[in-house]
Picture 1 (cartoon, helix red, strand yellow):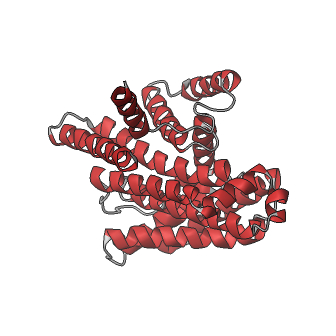
Picture 2: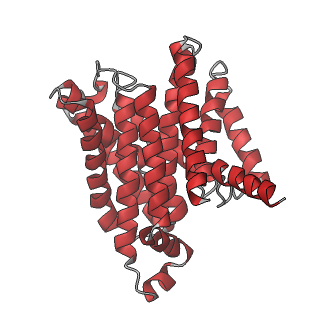
Picture 3: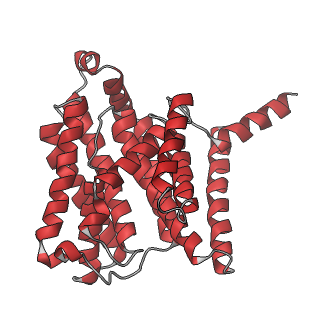
Length: 314
């Protein structure tokens, strides 16, 4: 039954990939739709990775745009200035973001709640300030002419890898330690869990995949600037996590898709877009404060397998 569930999930993943690939090959996806499709994938990577820190480990972090910026700039410099392969650039960008996560995580993760949020917000502003003042990476004008190497196949593969790695991490003893810290940090410490170690581990892993998202973003949109990675981008990702449900990977994926589509649908209403967006969020939070999925997960493979088992027993 376990193998059948995994096979069904894998079949669903391949089906989605080939459907989009076929539509793109036949020219049935417009340029506007393609941009939003790529943003959807990048947002899913960001939302799932931030949910690991905020939803599963219980650390309110507002510096995800900073990690994304580190990944974007490192990857762009490697491909554009040092002419290295794109795969190496993604890995190095992600590792640089993870190192930044460890550096910021070690001193700040002893803080809690609002204090940690302010500290991580400061980290994001430091990264933006550094990018503004380093001429090698373009300063305030940013890097222009980054080779366009991100395509649907690479984005989809990286998105699936992100989800698989984080889900497996959460199902491991390390992931369960992170959840224990979220539920009651003092009790977790009493049980012998090294809370600082696991919080930094979750922080670094979330930052790693934020760096992957940054590398993919930089190599799809040709141009990155410090203003591309402001507090508002971190806030957008946090909204996706809360909207989908703290502690639900499925919820983060659904919320990232829904918010990307809402943003795309409201493009023509430039003045009212943020007002409508905010009202929608308020309504959803009033009637569904735990988010769309709460802390539950949706698995297509599980549902089909259960139906098959029920049909077989009948």
